[in-house]
Length: 478
Image (cartoon, rainbow, N blue to C red; front, side, top):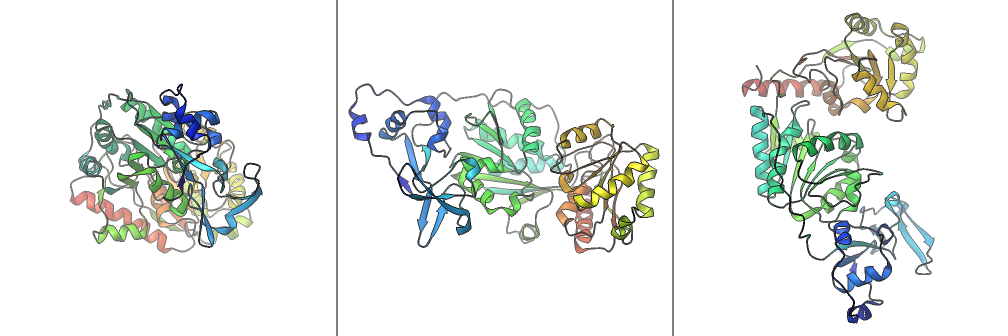
């Protein structure tokens, strides 16, 4: 990283003042491992200069000009279209600022990113006791040991675990190993709802340490903690902060598509650190690297309850979109739904587009009035998901927003229009992973209704069958 400079104005006079006291510990904890703007700090210019004079603060240029283009040091934006200028009252010039990360405060050519450059906190010694009474399966145990080794050796490892394998439990020993050695740990995930789900679980397992939960609007924004659970977006505020970073759902949108978030992860790591990647569906490049032994990885091919993964069935349903224009659905789709309504078995039905769902929902509500639909922009999304858990909704029509991160017991799942390109191999594997997750109901039906098989459908089924075979050969399923 380049662009480090110092604010010299007033520094020399501050050095000679007799009343200068030790560094502000609150400021220390607020800035250590972070890169914040001055407007983020509730301190006066004098106090900031005081700390800079004693070498406690580091000021990094926010926007660098490299040859004939600009680069934002916070988010690594180099796209000319995502820079703009404004008349700056501070330097009395036209300042260039970054539009890509503007939601986290304006970074410009005359503002700086402030980090802590002083002593490490001396009073943050905690008892990182691991209080978990569960038992790992054989596959989980092997993966847990590999995670501990990667953390000890400051290496990277991919944990390729099937949906429902119990990835979070696999992390406990590794996190404890890091904390016991005074390391800072971050679990990063693309989605806020996963942060909110993981936080109470980790606080229960590590009850004697502070755990920071970071997402848009979080109250823990300035909390210094040995264990941080964060959205990947919030990592843009960190700079060389963590000894261990765990990236959950590394294949999920938007992380997999956004180079800024990938940059944020690398910037938040210390120069010597470990990184643990978690996914049930690595992309084709990573799968190939695993097969060729070019990537350090470990697989968990079986779920903790030792039952095989449900294998999707392909069911041709004809030109369903043409039928939908006539306010009808294919007969085999209706039969699939009606059978489960009669059995009072909960269902998820995935559809490729919100516009299609608006026409599908009235047809389904003729079958049962309590059937609902949900998508990312639905203001009642959380309530509907909870109503589904409470068995108030018999079938939830959904976009891929529910392809991961939700668990409903005794569930059957279908995809309508599985041939649509929105249903990638990764998405279809994740959708299949909603079925049979609990030990009480380890089986279930997953059906892809389609108007023509796709490579994604075939590859998803093949990946699931391969994991089942690996688990069977390894004695991991009954």
